[in-house]
Image 1: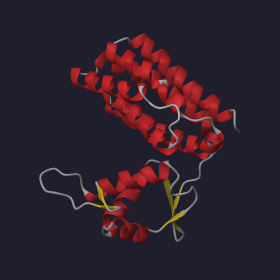
Image 2: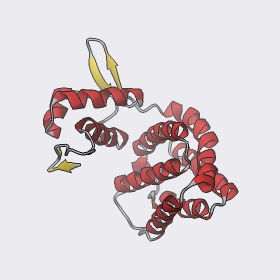
Image 3: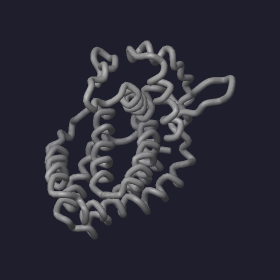
Length: 224
């Protein structure tokens, strides 16, 4: 968690480590392009901004490099990776195969507790105001929906892969966000998908997931 823009001191007894907190916060800034593509990353400045030592930040940056969100060059330093629109087709190809699989498995495998959480998320999305103007917060909501589905699928390896590609896809979306229609309609598509998963309708969930990912690619290409 953060306090006044800095990370809270980790509490004993299983609290999230400072490195994990730094990782989550920096990942969010990179995905939402608050740290701009190609921008140099100064670990000392980040540590000061977050109110922690350099070690947690350096640990976070190592993980972010594995996520393809930062890249390090010998004697040059660490930079936010560029957002390459030409990768859209390759990313979409992978997601069009794996997102329906995750939705199908979530419909089949989700626990009762997760199904209740999924229904609650569907309800939250169903009442979104069409005039909602904070596009960045809507993109964060989109990420949270996908992560919930991945968690419900019951396959940690599939979850890990899809989180990584969803993050990369979201960066592309954020790059053209100001040229797209309001994304609330894109987010609202999740209502039916989440309800299908909660109902255990694997076929419908898989089909809706495929349509959602395909729609994402078409929307981005329409403004390129």
